[in-house]
Amino acid sequence: MTRLGRTFDWMGPSNDATDEQFGHVVELSSIDDADRFDAVLVGEPFDEAVIGRKGAAEGPSALRQRLAGTKTHHFDAGPVRSVADLGDVTLGDGDVDSVADLQNRVRTIAERVHATDAFPVFLGGDNSMTYPNVAPLLDEGSVGVLNFDAHLDVREVREDVGPTSGTPYRQLYEDGLDAYACVGARHFETSTAYAEFVRERGGEVVTSEEVGDDAVAAVDRALEAMGEVDRVYVSVDLDVLDAAAAPGVSAPTPGGLTTRELFRALRLAGSDDRLAGFEVVECAPPLDSGTANRTATAGARAIAHLLSSGPAKERP
Image 1 (cartoon, helix red, strand yellow):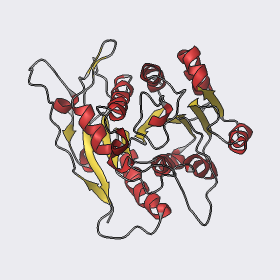
Image 2 (cartoon, helix red, strand yellow):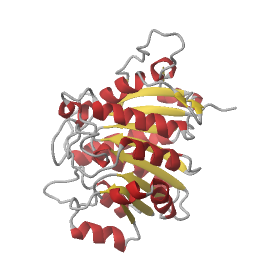
Image 3 (cartoon, rainbow, N blue to C red):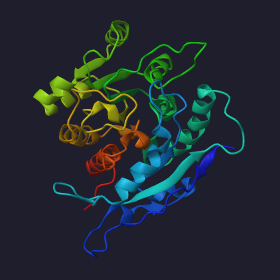
Image 4 (cartoon, rainbow, N blue to C red):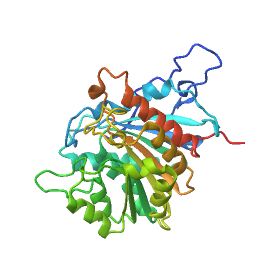
């Protein structure tokens, strides 16, 4: 039986009483009690669908650990409040037949999380989890996705392979996704056929160079591409960051965003009133060896910045 299971004990590592960290404010809770919180964390420790190097199954644990030691205060927004951790998706004793089967099982949990009043933050796990995380929203009205990623991830789902970490947005388009924008796309990382696929469907591609030139204008373009959709979902594949900032991902490459550019962009995107969900995927701690957890730290800070922009900032 697919369910959510407790996997992490939140604790702020600082012994200074004035240091309020996420480890001090995140509460353990159940999905039945999620309505009490502004935002909830859900871990998805799976990397069966990774095309490149595996390791993202350990992402949720590392993201939680680095977030626990992050202070809650943002200079403009104040402290983040009202966040719960619902645990990790667990599959019980039954075998998973395929990635498609795994996506279906994860979707049953995502549907329940979206049905609560809390803002969902999914902790990946590989990029194939984007499909079950977003798909339930398609049943509730028009949806657009802002994808911070080096790649477009619109590969075709081949019958002999099934879904992969490179197919989630093709799957969502096939299910009726209304709008799509990729922010931070890298030249020489995407095949022409996939670029044309997105263009033909009215999607927007904002390159990493364009973000570097003007992050505000880049995010404005991406949000404009959302049109009049009812809901906007934001996804961060950590390979959107330059390899120097996020070496612990499946496909690190040079020429990506800086952490400062990503954080500013997320603050801008997170202030959109239509925001309906957020995820950080492709954090692979085993590939981050010797870097002082640089990739997980960047992912944790991305979560903090997004939450502080609206979903869980302190209310007056």
